Length: 98
Image (tube, rainbow, N blue to C red; front, side, top):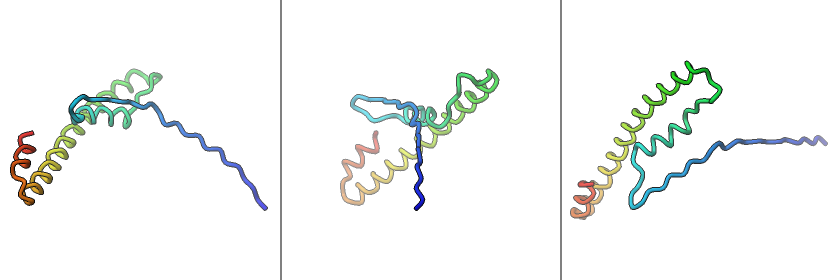
């Protein structure tokens, strides 16, 4: 009979919490959360590396915002089309004005 023991360690990292009042999160807020999880710059990294990573992080942030905004608009279009198809034109128009 063979027995074995395994030890598993996992680091979940830091957890960020953002709250809003009477609204959802903006694409910029979501992109910032994503960037903090996607790219981390060590405090021990050489200055040149930090600058390069931060420049890349800034560009990626703007790309994420653009595509998250497009995703929100696309989803809203789907909701509007469904509401209009079901005869809820007033509610569809309210969402369209958001």
